[in-house]
Image (cartoon, rainbow, N blue to C red):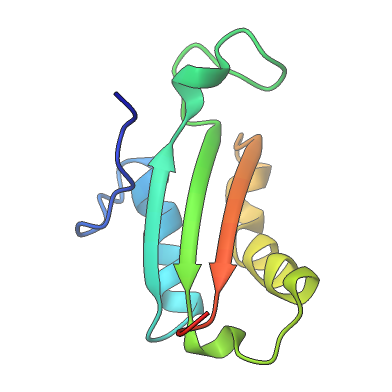
Length: 100
């Protein structure tokens, strides 16, 4: 069974929690969900034995209204630059404005 996207309070001791907290801060009023998909990528490029390298993220943010898909993606990648620098390898994104 696929692990659900985490929508609880962020646990800052995990990368998923830090991702969620960072995105909630970067996109006020957003609905943010994060799922660690690292186990699905074991043995692939960028995977680490401890996981926390591959994530699926859904952000529904009022600030995305009027932005292109590319602009939304760039905004999320900019917000998470520190995590990419710290070992995160891959990020699957679902980025929408409310009502989309």
